[in-house]
Amino acid sequence: MTAVTRACTVARYLALRLAELGITHLFGVPGNHLGPFLTTLRTEGDIEWVGTPTEGGAGQAADAYARIHGIGAAAVTYSVGAFNLLNACGGAYVEQVPLVAINASPPYEQWQNYRALGLLTSHMSPRPESNLDAYRQVTVDAQVISNPGLAPGQIDAALTACLSERRPVYLEVMEDLWDEPCPEPEVPIVRRERPFSERNQPMLDHAVNAILTLVEEHPGPDGRPRPIVWAGEEIDRFGLGGRLTDLVEGTGVPFCTTVGAKAVVDEDLPQFHGVYNGHASHPDVHRIFKDWATCRIGLGAWSTSKNLGGEQCVGGDWVMAANGGVSVGTSYFPDVQLEQLLPALQDALVKAYGSGGLTADYYAEAHAHHGALGDLPADVEHHRASLRTSGSPSRHAERLTYDGVFDRINHFLGHETRQDWTVVSDAAFSLIGSMNLSLPAGGFLSQVSWLSIGWSVGAATGAALAPERGHARPMVFVGDGAFQETCQEISTHTRLGLRSVVFVMDNGHFYGIEQMLVHPSFYAERGSAGAADPDGADFYNVLHPWHYDRLAAVFAGKKTPANGVSIADTSELDTLLARLTDPTDPVNAGPLLVRVRLHRHDYPRAMAYKVPKEEEKEQGNG
Image 1: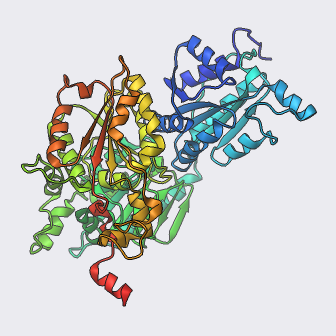
Image 2 (image 1 turned 45 degrees about the vertical axis):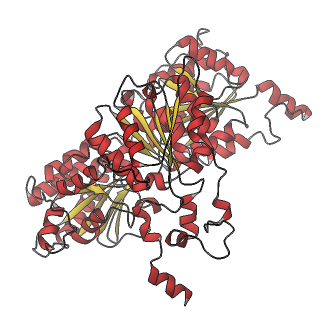
Image 3 (image 1 turned 180 degrees about the vertical axis):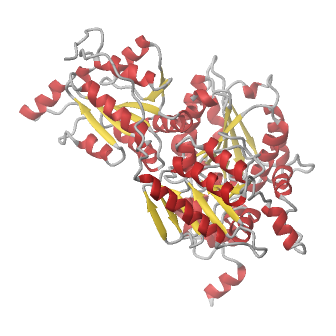
């Protein structure tokens, strides 16, 4: 029988377990039910409390922290706080991010009063399971802790599930339990991977053989195999960047990544051919991935609408290895884990084609084959150079565009700055625009499936505090509508002295992506008859205009500087980027809000496939 030690309480037990998992920061919004735990957390001293203006911002920070560090945590108070955190937890569940959601609930005594007398106190609901039931939809384990003797087992079970399933868990703790005694932690928390047994080996072998057959059955015109790997989000979530690198270097096979796995490995690897995002891909990348390669091998890639960029399905010449199984054409092999598949596939390809036997520069091959087409890059380095040099400083002041901003930022990151940066991109045009930035491993964060607008602002806090990226400055790209959702989180940046640079893409106070999704013809012409807005925009996409740069003055204090600037042309952007390279410049003393003023009809070139051409409009009017 385990002896109860008075020195250990439920609060201390949870604090010790979180620290054991390497969590250095806990994000959240306090409430009276949470107070005893935060007091204990400070006494223990291993984890720093980061209070945020909103529970959603706390969840966004914990999400980004977990993407980098492997696990993160947020703490809120019952109902009013928990339901605000639910959105972030839902995103972490969909995108397989291990996040611990801690919800401090009213004390046991108050629940007993409700049961006996119907007495409700603050934040309580007539349905005692309301919070638990909601979180069961977006977690792999959800526990209500009402008995201190059971608390260690419940906490350990949830944390083990969080690590093992790589998804959120929920711990609801009654306020009067925090200071109750419970046993000390004993056996360490460890990840419980799905076992690989003798039963799994034949299925793995069959899957690898099917992939080899697919490669052999889809040669190029010269008879040589021409596969391309599409590395995806699970490479990141399962920490398999090293094994991916081994595979592409050992075999020489060219690879692209999904948007969600951008910079999962160093994008300077010679085998890297770009980010493939369906119709929204860079034209060079799309040609190579869909037209030149003869089969595609998805490794950890999710077939989401964002990753497929307007395409509705994959074809019979695709491999998709994700979600615990492998589909090869029309065949499916269940219970094949990515961790075992990568080295097995590498060994099989080397055995079949020799070490480095699939080495190829598909850009050079396509250029040689279609030499008459002058717009094809001569090789992969020529393609990369075109991305980096197109944004060199401008001699003439021209109005900023989405593409102009991201081209210029790409040149800045590659040629002008010596600092390390973590690019945190929000949904919509910001994500599409930043897709082709050239970045080192770990230098990019985005939420590409859940796509909660404004995610990036809170996420930048977690990115800056994660130990693995603490040396890097966050560079945020967020739309004006998205920023209006979460602008309060700049307060956290300022309070902590984060030297973030937040580019607010202000396209004339307008939900640009929503207009593109509903009525893309808006971008083909300036104005349309019958529209409520003078320039043809649908009325519900028009935002109230803000001077975003002036918010810096709201958040700044005597000891916590923050700055804001507004830019509208290329010369102003050049001047700003030059200032970012000067450590003595005041704009580098704290967070910097940059209002980027764009035309309402502007959009990233990657979205051009959605805008109807002139002949299509004529047919539609006929």
